[in-house]
Every structure is written in structure tokens, then in C-alpha cells.
Image (cartoon, rainbow, N blue to C red; front, side):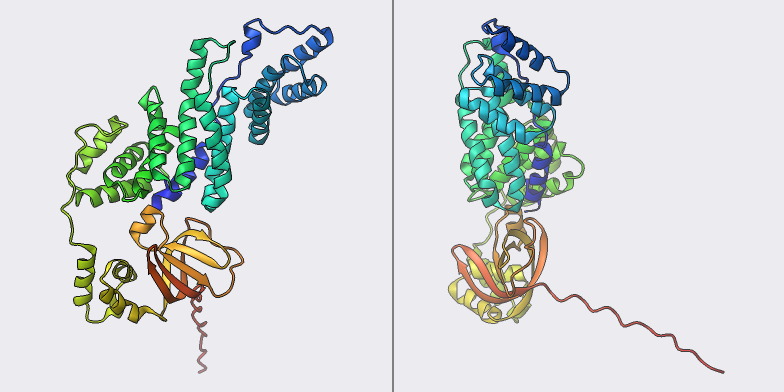
Length: 434
């Protein structure tokens, strides 16, 4: 959503969140006949501002009016109109700034709460591509505003039917923002709860087959996959559901992740076509989605012991097998493997989970890539001028230095990019003289 699929999810989120859905701004007070501008000059300026035909002209005229009449009775109505005007012109920074201005004077304004939530969530989703810390302030603010949006009450001047319609349009985004903030903090239980409420808030499940509803279906699958322990059954369901409607560019990666979790839960791909058919017609798992779990495998410690006993030369073990034994084997088996690893220099391929100039954390095994969890830390020999992007695939040469089982992490030192292959020597043509 992101783990191969996690990167896809973030890309989808950024694309989908690029333009906010229209939440129409209406001059409710004016429609209700409750606004009276007594000053003729102010009234004429008001008429001129709202009568402009282009977004740029209207925004400029409203800004001029609000500067000239900062305490006007139409201040909130014009701020709401200005917010919608900036949104229509695609200026999200000014839209957000105007939403905040409106909330200073009307803290319960549902449209402003929605717009502030939506834009901060969009910016946070984009920032998350460089790491959770960059996204945290934006997503925290979005979640806080979303909580206020869910608690907002109907203004006296707004008809109940209009308010209920507005609540229905904004509620999924409020729950989504809270969920995304929780997922960024790795609070997957809260993320699951709020993504579920988000999807249930859609009056028509077909709305979740595209746009934000589809994106959040994918993110819900991600949250189940990254829970401790992972909920494989639900992860497989929601990723399968998302795969049925995903854009062609993202579909293969999402399908791969859905199949991975289904196979891991069920032990084979038997019955999966029927699950795909169910997921196409059901947003949430129906009663007949009931794949049987695979028989419990041997304990990790027993598997590690079997691998050590059956491998004459432990140096021939793959990197993932070595990691498994270090983290899961009995102390004596782990020590045997570490004895042949420590101080050895190897090439470590993996997916970047976080990166600074001096240190890069990678997800190396498939499980960790799917769960977006780092299992290797590379301390660089020389500071990187440009750290690799989160989600990118890299290879570093480094020397095994230490490891811990809690948290599971293998640390290597003196990391550097592998040397580039030397070009083949040029071939010189020999001339034969007769």
C-alpha cells in the first residue's frame, strides 16, 4: 500500500490525494436570509467580490474586501467562498491557509475542518515516502483536525438534510486521516479500527472501487499485514479486494502481495480464484470467506537446528537462512552460524526502510520487505552525499559486526557501494602485411 506493496500504496496515495474532492461551499447564512449589510459601500464591495467570474479575480476581490472590512458580518461566508475559490484554482497552500483562518472564527465549520484535514493528510502521505518522521507533524495535525470534524455539530443556519449530506461526504476522510496517522506510528490496531470505520462510512460500497476508498482498502490490508502478529487472513482479503480494482500500473504488485499472504495463511493457492470472485463483489469478508489455515509448521528453533545439522559447510547458507538461524535458533546453533559470519564482508541487497548519510536500514528477507520492517543496519564507511530513497532497492558491501534478537537486527560496519565492474579491455585490430 507499500514490502513491495507499501511503496505502491504511497505512490497511489500521493496521486489520489493530489486534488481534493469537491465539498461545495454554499453561503448558508445568506441563503437563510440572515445577513444584512447596512453600509451601502460595504454591500457594493461585497456584491463586487462575489460577482467576479474567474477564480483569480474572485480571490483577489474577496481578499481586498476582508482586509477592508475585517469584522464584516459576511466574514465567515466569504472565507468559505475564498477557500473554495483557491481549491478550484488548485492552490492547496492558500486553500489550507484560508481553512485555518476560517477555523479561527468558526471552529465548528465542517468544510474548513475537512479541507484542513484533507490537505495535511495529502502532504503527510507524500512526506511519508522519505520516512515516518517527516510525515509525523502533518499527519498528527490532520488527525487532530479530523477528530474535531467527527465531533462537529450542525450550524443553526444549515438545514439538517444539508448537514447530513456534508457529514456523509467528509466522514470517510476524517477516519482515514486518523488511521493514516496511527499507521505512520505503527499503531496498527488503531489504524485498522479507523480504516474499517472509514470504509463503512461510504453509503455505496462501489465508491471504494476507485479513488480514496480504493486507496484506504489497500492501506487496511497493509495494516493487517504489519500487525503483531500479522493477521494473514484479513491482509489477504483486503489486498485481494484492492487488486480487483487497482490501476493497471499498480495491479501486479498488489496482486503479488495478496497472493503472498493468502498462500502464507492457507499453505497453497488452492481456492484463490473463488476468493478473488468474492472480493470483487464484497468490500468486507463475507461468511463464506473461510480458507483453512495451513497446518502448523515445525517450531522455528527446530527448523534452525535441522538446517544447521544438514549443512556441512555453514558458509554456504544463504543470507536469509543465516538470519533465520540467528534470530530463531537455539543459542548453540546461532553461535555456530555467527562464528562463520562475524568479520566477513558480503554484499547485502535489500529495500531501504530508512536512510541517513551515515546509516541505512534495509529489509532483506521477503517477509520483512512485505511487512516493511528493517532487519539489517548498514553503518557506512564514508558518509553518503545522497542517502537512498525510502522504498528503493540497493546493494551495499559491508562487514558483519553484531546482531541482536530483540529487536531482530543484524548490524554491519564499513558499508559502501560495491565497486563497479571494470569495462572489458578494448580489442585492437591486427594488420597483416604481405
